[in-house]
Structure formats: structure tokens, C-alpha cells
Image (tube, rainbow, N blue to C red; front, side, top):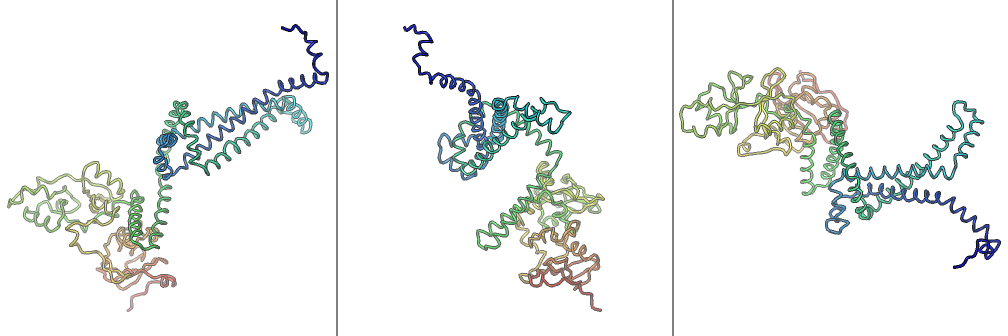
Length: 503
């Protein structure tokens, strides 16, 4: 082994090499921490971009993408399908990981700024600013910290927004499937690593969501319902413009969806059978007559009242009389079942829940004074969704309107207003607030006229394309109305006052 001294080694090197060699080592030692921190910031920015892009990629995958992944059946595709089954946990994991990375970027960037710009530089700037602007309340050290903070915040924010958010999310949106496949494995690992934190976050958000839902009521639901209504209306217009058998089916389906979206807003008084149309049995009616009423009406359940309809005793089920059909005299009152009474303002979705909970099919509706206003059945509620449901007894029922031609119809005044609206696909807002407090076509006409109309008087509301001509009056009751749908040309004419009755 050579025992050369350092002086001997130095003599073997050229004289011009000595300063460069030692200067290089000095610079490398001085800048190594700076380069390490800069490389760490770049690595963290890359990770932040991948995590942020994953959020866009995964949550922009559509139904077709998932169908393709199921057909592909590769390990990456299976991982994506597994992540898609727990979207809230996935989102929580992405947010937690991204926040940890961003915090790390801030800490490392602050250290990097201090290495590139030593505290003496900030102190010098602070001293110059203090001298120029004469800040008395802030010391040089405090101004130095302000400069440090501003430069770090501006620099880190710019890097995070551009390279950690905007650029990766744009790329992920354009290549969502490729990005999702590539990030499926890292996200599964992160989901396991951050499992305790993500569960805590998901449970916390669920709790906050429930509290907000209680505070805000159905405001969020109304917003969504408006969006759904607009989508349904758009689909209905498109299906009407292209008159094919397929579009007719779509139109019918959209009408059902439209009714479902307004289900929670309709009070039972809109669809109930009014007091005048109730078929009921008086409590003291003889048994043979009771059987005749049941046969003629065709109803399986009938209300039983004593003296008048405001005193309902209960319901009589036709099936309960089967074992007593051959008896000439039977105390049928022992078979009366209890019924439920509900206010006319109750919404039909709530009424449906009552029927479901109590296993009932009929309820008596009472007005604000406690008197019988009508009755409602489970069938009435279902018809509000799917339309008319007919059975062997309904076939013989007389329609409440007569068609004269494609634009002219004759209606009974007692026609339920919601049925009239359904017939012509009329939105209740067409008549503003005139339709809010009435239940029948006659009630709507009275609201529009503001007084009792006269026979042969024609009434219109503003510029709506409907005219109502009174055909028959029974004292102060409107019995028959001719409804005409005005053409666009007729509707463009200036609206005039209803003609006075000729003397």
C-alpha cells in the first residue's frame, strides 16, 4: 500500500485543477439540500396531479364505460368496478391523500424558499420598505416574515393550481378511462392506508347531511325536481314533434314520470270522490236493500252513515256478506269495520303511506269544519300516477265529457279539475292562482269570471288557448260547459270581454 502523503498527491495533479475541483465540491455540498427539496416539490406536485386527476377520471365515468369494464374483465377493470361500489369512501380517500400531499408541498416549499432566499434577503427588503414607507408599527423582522409568507403563498398556490389541479384534471377529463385504469391500483392501496380516516370523514359527512336535510327541509329536493321536470318536458316536446309508435310510448312514460315528480304536492281533495258522488249506506237500511245497493254500485267497500254523511260510522265490505247471501234478514251492522278520517289538505304521497302502513284501501276525507268532504281510495292514488284504471264495472260508466270534434268538448261542471288538466296536458300554472283553491271545472270558471256566469256566456282567462261556454245552468250551479281549444290564429286575436246576455 502506498504511503504517499497528501502533498505528494497534490503534486501529481495539475496546478490549474486544484481550485476547480475544490470549488465544485463546495458548490455541490451547498446546493445539494436545495436540489433535494426542489426535486421533492416536483415529486409531490406530480403525486398531487395524479390524485386530483383521479377524482375527475373516476367520477366522470359513465354507464357505458362500466359496461365495457365488465366485459373487459381485466385486473385493472375489476379494481375500477370495486372502487365504483364505494364512491363516498373513494372520494374521501382522494381528498385526504390530496390534502396530505398539499400540506407537504407547502412545508417543503417554505424550506426551499428559505434556502434560495436567506432570511438576510427578506430582512434587507423589510428594512428598505420600512425606510421608504416609514412603517412604525412593524419591525424589520416582522416585514421579513411578511415577504417570506407572500412569496411562499403566491408561488405554492400558482404551482398547485396549475400543475396540481388544472392541468391534470383537463388531461384526466380527456382520457378518463386510461387515467382511471392507471390509478386504480394506487387508489386501492391508499384506500386501505387511509381507511380509518376515510370512514371517519364519510360518517361525519353523513351526519352533517342529515342535519342539513332536517334544517332545510325539502329545498334541495325541490331544486332537483325542477331539473327533472324540465328534462321530462323537453322529452315530451321531442316525442310529440316526431309522431311514431315508439315516441308515443316514450310520451306515455314521461307523463307517468311527470305525475310522480308532482306526487308530493297534490292534496287529496284534488283527486278524492266528492261528497255528492259518494255511494253510501244508511245505518238503518234493511238487509235486502243493502244487498241491492252493493249490486247496483259494483263497489266492494261502502261507507256507512247514520242520518247524514257527516256522521260516518265505518265501512261495510261486500266480501264480509258472502256467507250471509242466502239469509233474508241479517244484522249486517255487526260487520261494520272502522275507517280512518284524514284532512282534505293531506298530500297524496302521505295518504299512500297511511294506506300502506294500516293495510287499508279507503279513507273518509273531512273538511276544516269536520264535515265529510269526500272519500279517497288506493285506486284513486294509483290512477294519479298511471292514469285511468278500468275494471268490469268501469266499462259501463258514462264519461264526464263528450267530444264534438278535435278542438271542441262538452264537460260536466263537476268534472274534477285535475282530470280536466290531464285530458289536455295543461300545466296548473297556465291559470296562475285561479286553480289553487278549486277542485272542479265549474269552480275554475267561477274563479275566472268572478261572479255567477249566465248561459251561453263565453269566458276566457287572459291569453290562454281555451274558451269556456256555459251551456246549462241549474240556478247557481254550472252543469254543462263547452270547452274549445283555440288555434294559434284564433289565440293571436286580441282578448275581448265576455259578451253580455242579449235582452
